[in-house]
Image 1 (tube, rainbow, N blue to C red):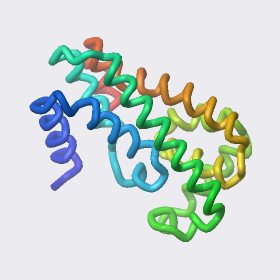
Image 2 (tube, rainbow, N blue to C red):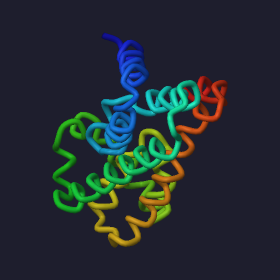
Image 3 (spheres, rainbow, N blue to C red):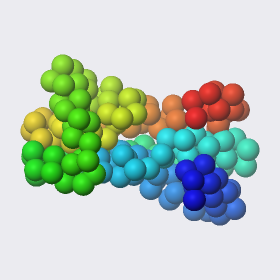
Length: 176
């Protein structure tokens, strides 16, 4: 099964089971933000498509947005905890061990931008899930991390769902 087929299956499942849409959005945003899962899951494209379901099927925006923001927040928090707990041992864990250069890029970005890297990294695909891991490895103070994590999760979730939800399907197609 190709990624395109997987995306279509998930989107159709959410369309046919709208009661589960909040849970699906939460899981996808969580996976997109979790250091190890994000490298394997094209959740951003799926979330853009699910945003269109909000506009097309009359789903309420607020609960879907809160589910996406919560999932993203918790995924980053768990990645931070994982980095804080395991430190540089994560370099030898799969799938990071297959692409250690991603962790090196995350370290360079974190060294340059500090707390802002947590906020900015949320909007930069490949760094989205690595920066919280690096922040944990570098023992960034938790309150700074969580503030940047919360604000960026709320803005990111809004930005990823809005194109489809409010009829900007051309923007959703361009981004996906």
